[in-house]
Structure formats: C-alpha cells, structure tokens
Image: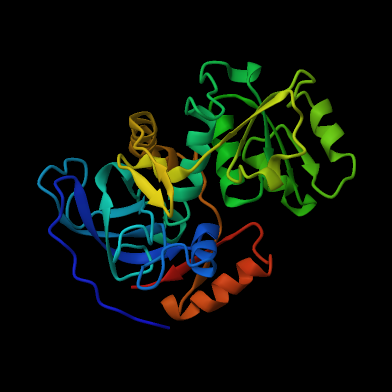
Length: 309
C-alpha cells in the first residue's frame, strides 16, 4: 500500500481540521479506486469520525477537541479524504457526536444518512412534503443497505407509510426502524406484493435512485418519473468528474446543513440508530480486505469501518 504525506493549506474560514479516528467504507470508494476515477495520488474515503484539531476563523458550532463526524468527497481534491490521519471538512457538513454514540458508529452515518435525507426532500428527487404523514407512501428498495436503513428511519420520523424489500433475516430490524411492510427480495411476487401494500400506486409515482444510468432504469414503468441523487451536492461548490460538471446547489447545501444540525439530537434520543459497524482494527492495512468484501457481495446488514487512530 502506498503511504504518502500531504501538507494542508491554511484553513478556509468555515473549515475544520480533523484528526481522523475512524473512516467508514462506502461503495463509491471501491468504485472510484477500481475505475481510477480520480487517478493516482488521491486520498479516498468519504465518512469520518474523529476530533477537531483546528478551526477556521468563521467556525461557530464546533470547537477544538470536539468529537465530530462528517462527510467529504474523498479523492476529488488532492490530499483530502477520510482514509488519512487528518482531513479537512466543512463545518456545516459535520455534526458533534453525542456521548451515547461511539465514534465507530458515528462514522457510519454521514454519507448514507444524508443520501436518504436528500432523496426524500430535495426538489429534484422525491420532494416529499414533510407534513403529509401517513398520506406519504414510500417504497425503499434494499432496506437493509446503509442508505436503506437510514431512509426507512428518516421517513418513519415524519410518519410516512414505509414499505421495504430485503432479506428475511433483516425483517425484525426493518420493522423496529419503522417499516410497516417488509418483503423478501427473493420472492418472485415481491413487486406485486409491494404494490399491494399501497406503497406504490397503480398510477405510477416518483423513483429516486443512486444509479440513474439506463441499465438500472430501462424497465421502470413509463408512468414513473425517474430522478436521482448524488450526496456530494451537499457541498456548496461545483464538482467535476471527467467531462461531467455538477453545479453548486444552494438548496441541497441548506437541506444538508439542516440535517447535520439536527443529527446530535436525533442520535442522542435514539430517533436515528447508526448502522452496525464491522471494525477493521489494522487501519488502512485492512483496506484490501474491506474492498474485496464489497466486490464479493459479502456486506449485508453492517458497514465496514477502519480504525485509524
């Protein structure tokens, strides 16, 4: 494994310097590595938990020494990623970890939970009215994935009627998190069963996916509006991947900021329960093992977390 030292530039006014204790693995880490999305010399890793080591001049919610978790787009900016002893993060896309939440659990929250939050409420995704309560009917496919677990919980917080699909061994967990209907993903009638639960109406609906390419959506009913979600629009900046340019979104940034300000209370009250972490103690020396577990499809019901410090 290639270990390199990067020197950080002076902190921008709203940035934090974080000493990383735990970094959680996400599918994007493996996909970016395998497909060389950012090229050589980039630091991957998007989810982190650790302590604030220094703060920018305009930071107001957090201070040096605070235990925090947050989201960055590891690899986009050279030298910045969660798979590192230190990283830099936006104060608005971080939250203070409550005392009842271990750091390794907190590290599982940012990317997956924010994806669920934005998918539910941003205007370009599902755009659900938070006041609808039981009149909002939601089907979460793959409810036992990291994003699925948080989407079910967030939707349940607002009283939405939630159906989900997963392995039977995860049925009790999904019910405990608020899903009203839970179906076996291997059931050949599962699509009909889910529709019969009234989670999806015959008239169609809106689909939000993290994989919007045609190969994943070509069989979707023409009555269904297909939307997508990319969690990194949480940052108030333009992003570029190859020839694809993603403009900055004030709406997404404000939505994400609202969520991160609410997370300490939601976690401390048990209204949001973190994913179960599978902690790899040998730090970045365990990345090969963790990446291969994802490639082999062995990750189910837990999230890989690397202990760094």
